[in-house]
Amino acid sequence: MSLSHADLPLSATAPHGAHWHLFCRVIDNWGDIGVTWRLATELARRGQRVTLWVDDSSALSWLAPQGAQGVAVKDWSLASSRLHADGAQSGLFAATDVRGVVVEMFGCELPESVQQQISRSAIPVAWINLEYLSAERHISRLHGLPSPVMGGAAAGCTKWFFYPGFSLQTGGIMHPRQAPCEAQSTLHGQSTQADCSLFCYDSPALAQWVTAWQRDGLHVATYPGAGARAIQALGLTGITLWDAVAQPEFDNRLTRCAFNVVRGEDSMSRALWSGRPFLWHIYPQDDGVHRAKLDAFLDWTEAPLAVRRAHGIWNGFETAESGDWVPTPQRADWHTWVKWAEGVRARSLRLPDLTPTLMAFASDKDARGPRHSN
Image 1 (cartoon, rainbow, N blue to C red):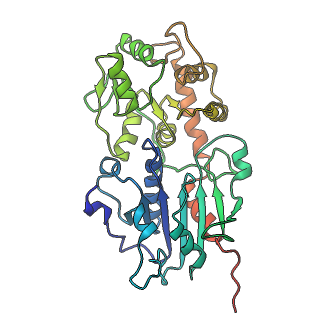
Image 2 (image 1 turned 135 degrees about the vertical axis):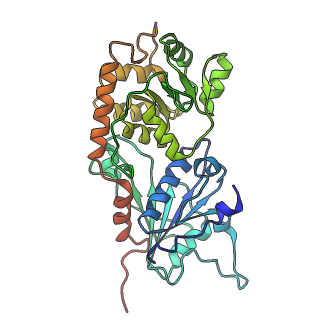
Image 3 (image 1 turned 180 degrees about the vertical axis):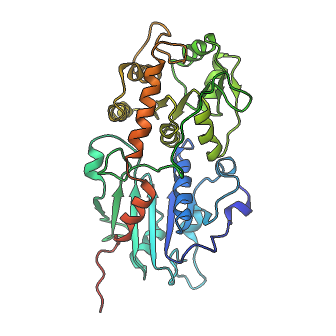
C-alpha cells in the first residue's frame, strides 16, 4: 500500500467525539480485512474518527484503492512498540477526545502497550471484542456479556462481547447504504458481468458444478484465490478470470449475475442483500464446527431442500451421483432458489443495522468500570 493511502487524513468535517481504534490481523484470506474496512468506513460516514490498525494492509490496494474520508490506516507494529523520548507510552487516546473505543476484530489479541493505555487512559474507553457473524442460537446469549481481564497489562479491566447475528438479540448485520433494489434479469452476460460468479475455496463439486453450468450455455467467471487455482489445476476451460475489484464494484456484480457462489463472511453478507440466488462456501475448519454454523444459517433462511442439498454437496458434507442438484435458470427448481433469495433479503432488512447498534453499545461501556467523581 502506498504511503498516501496509509497516511490518509482524517475527515475535517467529522465532529470531535469518539475515536475508534479497530485492530485487525489478516490470517489467511481477505474476509477479516473486508469486514473491518466496511465497518471503518461506515463509522466514518456517521461522523466518527477512525484509525484502522492492521498487520497486513496490502489487500486494501485493490479492495479500497481510494481509501475513505475519515479513516486513517496504520501499521499494527506502531501501536505495539513506539515510545516517546521520555519513556512514556505513545498515546492512542488524546486528552481532547471525548471518548475512546477499541475494537478487537474477531478476537485478535491487543498489543500489551495498547492494553496499558486502556487501563491508564484519562478518558473513558470502551473495549469491545467483535466476533464472527453466526446464526447459531448461543450467539444471542453471549452478545453483550462482559469479559473481565484477569491478567496482563490490563488486569482488572473489562472488555465486552459484541456478536453480529441473525436475531434481534444480537448486533445484527451491516446494512447497505441504500435499500437494495430489485435485481434485473441478466443471463448470457457481457464482458463485465457473468451469468454465474465464483468467489470460493476449492470444492470437491467444483468440476461438476462448472461443467453443468457450461452445458446449459452459461458464462462463468471467477475471482482470484483458491477457487481460481483449483479451476486451473482441474484444467477447466472457458471460464473468465476477473481481477480483484473494490468492494462497491464487487457488490454491484452480485446483483448483475444470475447466481453467485460466495465465501467467508464479508461476501456472504453482501450476497444476501443482492436478492440473487447464491451459495455460501463457508470457511472450512478442521474440527468440523463450520457445518453447525452453516446449518444454523440455512435454518434461519428457511432454506428449502434443494438449497440445503446444494450447500451440503458444495461444502463437502454430502455427495451427488449426477449434476441434477446444480441450480441453473434452465432447471425446474430455479424458481425455488429465486424465491429463497428474495426471502433472505426481506428477512435481512428486519435485522438490526450493525454499525449504529455498535455505536450505541459502545456509548455506555467503560473498560475500567463505573467512574466516580471526587
